[in-house]
Figure 1: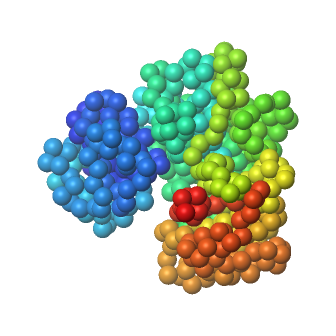
Figure 2: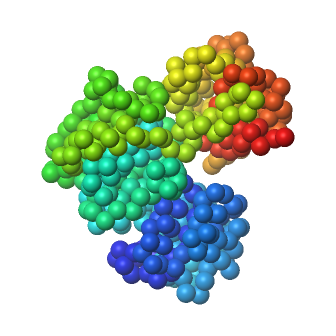
Figure 3: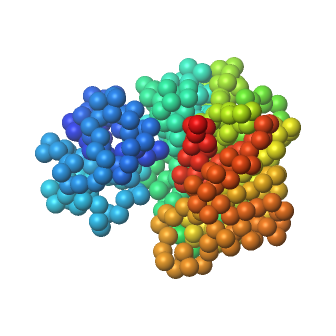
Amino acid sequence: MLPELNMLDNFRHIHFIGVGGSGISALAYMAIAHGIKVSGSDIAPNPTTEKLEKEGVQIHIGHSKDNLSELCELVIYSEAIDKKENPEFLEANKREISTLSYFEALGQLSTHKKTIVIAGTHGKTTTTAMLGLALIKAGEDPTVIVGSRVPTFENRNIQIGHSQWLVAEGCEYRRSFLHFQPFGVVLLNCELEHVDYYKSEADYLSAYQELVSKIPEDGFLVYNEEDENCRLISESYKGKKLPVASAASKNLSLNVPGEFNQMNAAHALEAAKQITKNMHGVRNGLQNFSGTARRLEKKGEKNGALIMDDYGHHPTEVRATLKALKEANPGRRLICIFQPHQYSRTHELLDHFANAFGDADMVIIPNIFEARDTDEDKAKISAEKLVKAISKQHSNCRWGENAEKTLETLKKELKKGDLAVTMGAGDVYKIGEDYLSAT
């Protein structure tokens, strides 16, 4: 059942399924700020569930129909759950409790705000945080919802503002970003992704074209004019179009490395110009941006070796991130522990992955992180096959076998002055954390 009115005005108790997720937890924080009683569940504790619990949220580890209070009036759920089997979702339907997916709930919120949606295959999280901080420094007081924790947002994934502006990261998976009612869209790039859902590149592009078609005539589209697909998508919008080229990023002074971050910032700058006249504040925000969790994140140092982590899981992201790390750390040997995310993605993009690790001195593949994969997907590819493909182009790539053995390899290989980066959208970051905490 879908509630017809704004959830934050009409519900006293909201339960979140998958509350520890990088996106959905932002709505839990927002509900808390509005004085709504919040409960939530997840399959395992994490830093987000622990932080929410400290703020008074009743956290349930594991899913059970008993997690739904008798007073619960709305359930918001992560798209990651199986709606046919999740006991809490089934119980909500049985009791005729209203339910919304995370993006359906975000879409409802966007109808009450002037919403800027950050979209693209790569860079959404960083650019959303960049634009949000820029507008905050400019005094625009936006609400900002990011798919990762942001240090300047008290290490949360949301900054709750009180103005008409909402800056939100838009995910294209299952066309989720179409739930938004955008006033503006920032389109960073467009390269086939989520091959377990999209049938072809044309199918993938059609989702973005539909998003852009939702922008009102008095809104705006900021897009990457150097990306052929972005140019094609921009043709479907008849309003104010603002192309961005790499030359526009050359004069930006940033605290985060990489040419891709320069382009992210250039897109954020162009969008900010449509919202505020305080360009001094905007530039101050961009220059002081220090990154987000799991995006070129420094985890720590041990025995003279630096450990970093990054969420990159697409070949383009891997290549750009390794290049940025190499340029920012020219004197260090670079070891990349890469965990592919999804068997389907790994198989479909195998040739691209094979050529993505040129800037790494050593590559270790511990395993493939399973997510929404079928038995057929898993039969087509393995970590060993990926290692063989990379090894045709790279002289030092090895199979780690699993996380535990990869950690032991890292302990043996990592020397003073080296840089090791864990990369992937799964749980590979734990290898770096375990290395730092090991005695």
